Image (cartoon, helix red, strand yellow):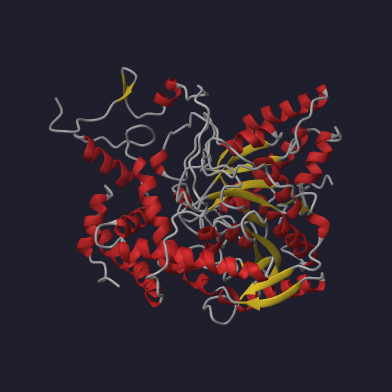
Length: 497
Length: 100
């Protein structure tokens, strides 16, 4: 198993290892399996070498290289990188090089992290399997016949394969947590506004949030501390510094009250697999054994989250994606007049899932249907916010499965979009409420693939959430043997720790 | 709930969204959009008359900053990303009428 981000940063900061040496090991891991996995749209080997050398120079000069010194990271390819192609896995952004860096990219660089590439995603982050990419499917590194989940499937696969110890994804309805669960890694959706969205290409602005993937809970805490906190360039950014997470991880859950969401885990919800329910029960028992009170509770309106989300998110997307008109950046398909040029460009540039959501959103917002769909969904959003508030009067945290099943075969759900959407049933409510939630690997399903347990917290409740995640991590049954290290020549790569 | 979405509705929506759909795409999308909207019919069971809508998870407030010049994007860099440029402006086909 390759080293964690915490281990790498400590070794590089102390001068025990060079950032360049760490990077070369990880680039070798990429070389060995990337053709099979296809986690990346773009590997930035030369840029990463220059960044690693700069970190080593800082260490040699006695300057503080930052809390993520020399840690290789991967960025979902919907985060702007100045001068470097940013595609959202869409043909419509063909050739576009952003004129600015996303805030998270600036903060990672300032913290000494080394960006090694841009990862594949479902086009514009719309999907749950990373099969909707203009640049091909990403495969689950634990079983290449299975999907890695989505939409941040490339970022999840890159961590699971040991290409990087850390990556960033974006989560609008579960796009960090669901692929984390399917790839056997940790994935965190922070509180809405906790991480700046400046430079994140918008999908549904009231739901989108950037967050980390890692193999360990501590690594996600370290990354969130580096990228979180107020950013004046995002008007929805919470005006507070990033919360301290790394120092609370060992505080345990003694005395905490934790509720299992009945609607998202019991017999009532069709589609939650038996093996996933078994693991959830074991996770609850582990929290109880660590001193928490765990009981089942009802958060009734969460079952309506899926319906509300698949109106609200497409509605916001139809508005956000109106900017792709062939005028200022990306693809243009020429036509004799501007209107035809817009239509020809959008028709050629967007894939089917993006078109589906744009049309769904346009319909839900159109005259005569607004109240029946969009207006009603916004009211349901209020009910979900209220039900969570009521639940958090009695509980510090809530618990559910992250995804209804383990990773499914590539191609299994592409024919029927509604079947694919059902994957997000447990993750969507947190986005609608703006709350943090994270997926922690907790053993394997009957098929030997990872199961994720979701820990949900009220807004800005990250510290409490991470404490429970650390307890779950310590108590979890053995995970998938391939997580964190591609086997090259029969031996794990890395292994510096 | 409203009537089921029709093929004509989808064609109209595609037009509004500036997308051209082939006949077979229209058929496929009509069925798929109808399935999603049918699922949303579960919301009809809820009594929402006295429930206010939520558009955003945060209590949105006006954000002000001092009126001083900050960092701005470089014009040449922005224009370099455009498909067509003339005299430091984005160049587009005629909006009205035929090309001159």
